[in-house]
Length: 375
Image (cartoon, rainbow, N blue to C red; front, side):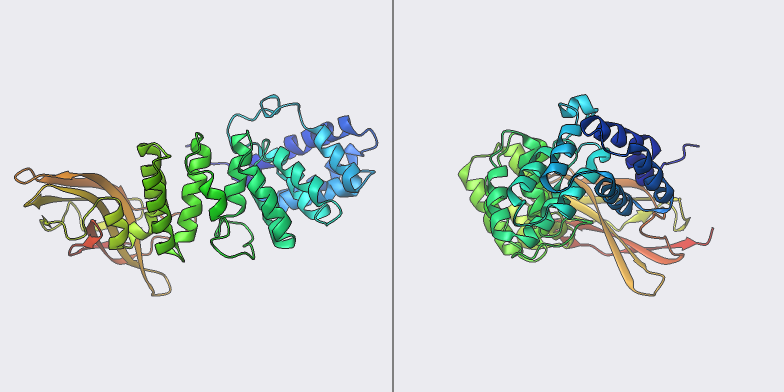
């Protein structure tokens, strides 16, 4: 059985703390690498990822013999000459460099050091994505930082362009909220939605998805404008639109379906859902099927919804994508799927009564009940 190693352990561990110490000492002979490693490792095993990053940057601050921009120069000189030379093999970067941008946000977030600090984040994001640090600057110096973000959006490096979108996302997960209007980043993503990099386009889609939680009509109007501009290839734009509207699609919002070409009132019908088993356990497979028919050719977007109750007795529903396709008269679509019911770190599967329903173009059809038993 494969044992999954927690991210916090792979991100910052003894080997990586030792590597940071060697790289920093190589750029600054006065850095006490031995004490740095000893002090960080005394605390690291009991800390979660966010605190591991903070503890490492704090120790850098403690043991560097210089402060301010002199310390920043040391950190930048300690970086390998390129991300590739550092061992970066993806667009997101290596967590070993997350304490570096954390250091910038903690110890150089002043008006005196602002320009140098923001320039440093643009360089550091090539080694590890620096949007969390950038958000602290957006809160402390919104006007100046936003001007820099707009420059980032035009950078030749796609990782810096992505930083512009991620830093201004209204609801970036596991990140501090920024004290700006939710649509403050729209001028930024306006520059990026037709970007050649999928890394950037995915960020744009997530940015609009965040905004869609509070301002769905604005998101639809923005997507409409982008579509009419013809600047983005069809397949790229279709991806952004689907991802931006994904939560509204799950909620069955007719306007989202209509924009994507799925009529909410399409002339489709479903046979009753058939379940292979109606008694299951945590880790069991829910196998279900139904037949979709139509009286006219209709693009269809199908999801399935599982209804349950939390341990606290509150109703819960989870919506999953099923398929996109076209239904033709006389040629029904056979819908069948095996879905594993399993507790996760975030949600425990509670024994009790459940139900499943299919949703076509936002319209939900009658649910079928099943039961989850104690193991």
